[in-house]
Image (cartoon, rainbow, N blue to C red; front, side, top):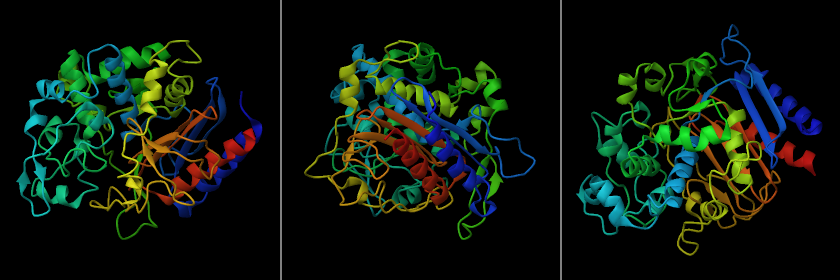
Length: 416
């Protein structure tokens, strides 16, 4: 049931942002749910685009959720682990399915390639310790492929298959194409394409119709516009071409066959549906609305275990991320600043704020984001989850992040 105090605070906060033309934020959608799967607060603010002629945003507005896809791909992999089709710590299985990963080299600072010293496992792929990076965060990787370059938002598997490692496996945490590779491992082990697996084993049991790597005609009609702040003039924001459009253009099975099912960034969704996936995780893998169990409790518990070394990487997310492609991301000195700098954690596909956060979230709250400034969190301790969505580039937009923090805090404050 909607908490009116939270609802009023969320509406006021979001409308203050989208109603102020100086922010450059045309529209935002926020949804928070409790352990019962019912909405605590939900509001669509502003319009689907900056142009004043655009329709109003609604709770049916569809967003490209980018890296929020990683949670779905990881859940799919963990379902396959439950079924005995995949193993988290068997590098030989990974290499049998993906011989490319046995042969992959490590890119050095001088542009040379050397052999890897450790083996790659599925667990390493799901925890971003396998050694892969992203070209928009890593200047070394960005420069390596030029003059052609890399573009992971082109829905083409070839960009993934030809990327070298940027670190030795197990050496450090670095965000990258690891979960795209995990999706490939799943597809080759099962013979089922990743989106098909997600639809059959996650979306259908949860009765969700609007989370898909190939948006339906109904979803396309509700699609939000993409926006850009260009480097050098962050005060200006404008509508731009969609960044991830190949799946939007594919209509026939033949066209879809050539499009990569990106476990790292391939899905589009309505926020009100995505939070129902989070609600299932709040309930140890069982949907509070349909009663379907999509993961076992011990599997969800395993996803919430810290995968990075507490002794070697307590501050893995404080190392800073450069803006290798400034039109795609702002530099990030720290992923989730917390007073006192407590140790940080990383579960299977998401960051863990191991100590309570300033907004009121509990211990070991999972959260992650999408590059077009979308953010979700899932607090199993307090039974609250939510998501805020925009379509604004580059990543790290202060206005959207400010609203995420304000709306999340409003939910916890109202719940007492």
